[in-house]
Image (cartoon, rainbow, N blue to C red):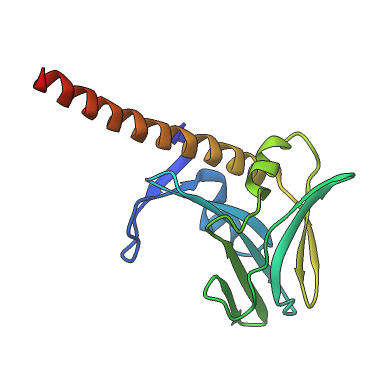
Length: 169
């Protein structure tokens, strides 16, 4: 599963990050998109990344197709997980949905990769995108790798407990 990812640990990262090969900076710097973030402990979160001429001050994300949808919790403008900046004549906004703030959107995307999912960036203004196939795949792959990393960690702990029991007996 790791083959779909690039491992990276920058100067200020506590843990190694898994970056899906389809969501590297070079592929994403000038577009609005959703991104999945995964670390070596299997912890993951979603971010919505807006790029445009005008600020929309977005604080949430709704992903949908026809009658089905999922919506993140709000991350207010001014929160540490809601970052906004300007570069040349463009506006950049990144909202990170950490600690369950994705509200099931990660699972929703992973379970519906076969559908034409759309997303609306919710804020004072709004922006709509159609999720790229590779972004949906990145979410699905990251969720699977996250689960595998966590399972491996639990099994390693269980092995250590069993090894200690064998040494005692």
